[in-house]
Image 1 (cartoon, rainbow, N blue to C red):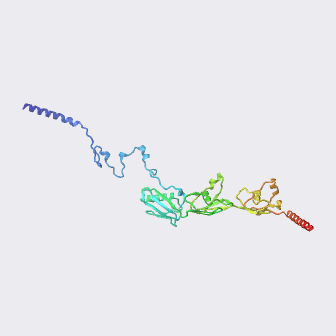
Image 2: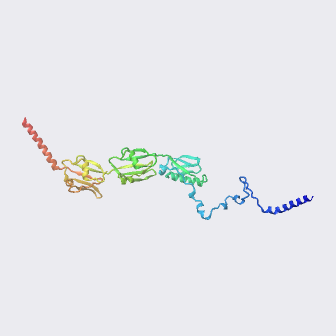
Image 3: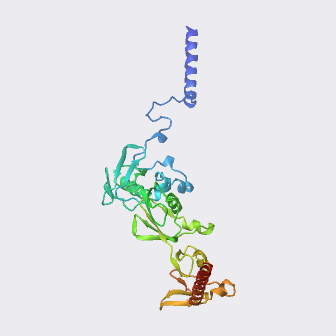
Length: 357
């Protein structure tokens, strides 16, 4: 009995001593994972959902990085258009366009430009496109689709599938005038090569009428030297009209072997060069009486020429101008002398034949 009482006393003392100690000792426990979608008990402050529209303070960046996190237009995707050679071609009535939005397979439409210069598309209706480039049309459509709330920052592609006028008309002083197919942007030399080049009487001016500016013809000065060729080789677009002007003319008449008109292809054409192109001077020419008839503001003026001295290089050769007429008259004295000589020879021959019989 005594032993039993002693054991109970020891157990009670131990229990009383262990109670305050156990209140101060924290037994580490492993954090049990919270089920998906439920906030963790260990970190309630960080898992509390933030109401919509209120920024989360716990995820707010430092003040010095505010500039790098600020939203701007530069962070948005850039406008996507289909880059091609026809991006510089202006759209006209009758052209066939393909309009699509990247990532939206349902918004892919082929539309033809009407006679009023507009197209009709779903959601946005009629849009004026005549006179604009494909890039400009894509930018306009992007803004309309975005402002209407149909797409969030759409990436629009506009491609010209067919031009109403696919060719370029080449007229004037070319070997083969006609209409030549032209797809995309080409240059003036490409068009002239397709027409097999210019003729011998072609001038140095070309008139290009663009289909989007029919009242404003572009004048191009043809040059084939390395420095001027780059300026002459201007872009030509489908629907344009190219006219190669005929060169100005000057004329050689009178006592030459071949009276003719000469195209002023050579800007340095002179009197002696013109005579050479007329195959030279005839035997009965009166060189001292040659004249150069030139049209001036006061009317036509006859300029005397010293051909004998020019041929002897005693006076400088004279440059001719467009519209000049070089006249080399016949020498009456020389012609009369030759005619008399011919008559004398004929008479002498007749007398000789008569005496033989």
